[in-house]
Length: 399
Image 1: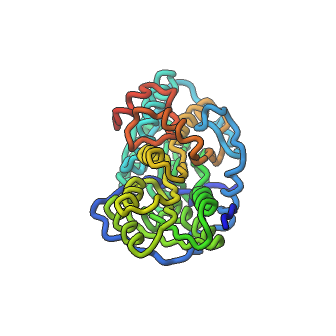
Image 2: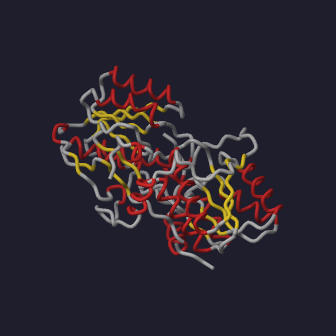
Image 3: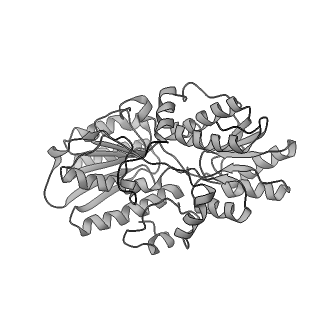
């Protein structure tokens, strides 16, 4: 039978909304390991699960055509102490641009920067890239502090606990600090910007698979990395719902490597039918589908991501699928938040952006909107009104 089935940055729950969607693919990855474990209490947080589940159904406040300015149930922060005149210098400590999701966002962020430079809000944004290394990012933040030339800080943390003291040091300068996409365990930042979170992703995807499968069907879960909280939360939510629905789910870590993904799927198909594929990030989604084709097996019910390679393969095959989203347009929001802060306007203390999957009914529209974009581009990048559109994204010009 088929079945349907406010916390602050300083709280561990909210701080664990960390993002590593489209994680770095390492071609030297060892053979994947099936975890064979149930949802771990270290990662499953019932309060945060319930919060994100509820937020999925809340209509965000803000302009309908500007999702990067929308917010879910915002609690506003007074920023009048930061009001200044003239163009201001921002300092951006970025975790990395090591995967297609982050590269797409970085392109969009730089185009938003050009617009704010043209309007006289920002003079420049000095950026340091930590290349996925905690020690490097700590040194980057401390460099900015010692330099003393930052009118405001934007920080996309590489990890949660390790970055917390450095973020606090930036706050101690008295300049506004904006944290986005991954959290830290302090509430000293003026605003923390992020989509709803990992549990919401897990609920969206698991419910879709459950609705389209039968009790007793088998799902192979392809996971990128262990120990990354938002990814662990995606799986913890999905595993909980699969267990409750009587779906047999086995999970493997693959680091998104296409060869390893194909091996996992091929090995599973050799032992029996696989009715569903669940992914905690879209890297390698096409490889998973190709493994079914090469085995001559029926296409599975599948969840991938809003990367265009998956959307295009989904359209070509006609398979039953869903594209969950960890809203890439969030890369615009920190700069727009800085504009508001420098003007002394209120911003949400925790800026929760909408996070809505792309359904079959919406797929054609998003493919049409992104016609001509490369496969590594993300459909919900939200930069259509920015300078350089569409050429900069089509050419994949990484600043």
